[in-house]
Length: 371
Image 1 (cartoon, rainbow, N blue to C red):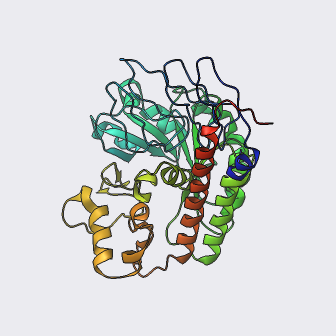
Image 2: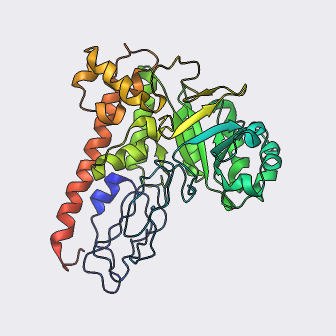
């Protein structure tokens, strides 16, 4: 359910036994959240979630991540397994060996022992052939670089391994999405879409087929920002959109919860979490930053880049969204004007605040029933 539709409905959901507060349904939820005995607050289901989040408190609980891509981990009592920053797939993020994950071509799997991996290839059969027992245990997700590839070998392979389908040409690849649907029976699937003219048509089809979406975006011109704004409006208000569209989803939830997040992390380009190994074996921060001549400590790149932008006295210095953006849209051209991007951020923040205010009014109403 879109945000505006939820705000308009404002209906009381049924209470579970022992529940003292009404369960709340928010964007993307089709059933009320379930509160288990002993839980002091109702579970909240977030955009892109199709089932209620269930929290069971107890000494052996590790962590709770509500279904939905790129969610910050929510800590509850007990030890917490290390995870790769914001997760990337519904139910698809696995405990990793350290905080950094390496995006590598499948041919290099054996060259990076002990590392956490995103494994990519144009040929799905290479992925299946290149990964086995120990290799699979280190994989956060696999990345298929051609939507037109024969995916049959993936459909019955590695149940639960998330798959990222990378679109090259939104117009040409659009009809090919239909043949990818069988993957959803065994895998969480995300479609990564380049923000180029007409990309929104493919996004619309992807979410209608129940794929999560990630926008591959850099310094979009005004028409593309307008197209992104239409996609964001669909994510926020279209009742039929039940899957997250990134980066909107994570940014919206960060605004709603008042939690810090950066686009670098959401887009998996923060070197504190992610590195990219080129096809010729060179390590860089991300595909977008390949060839960058780094100076100083690599993992602090984002904070140093943001500090440099502030010191230069440009529009970043007074930008209210400097924290979550952290200069993401100032690369590669620091003179890029962010007016359209800031308007989009403002829409996400205003909608999140509207939802939070409505929830604040909703909870204190006790046991009164809504018609």
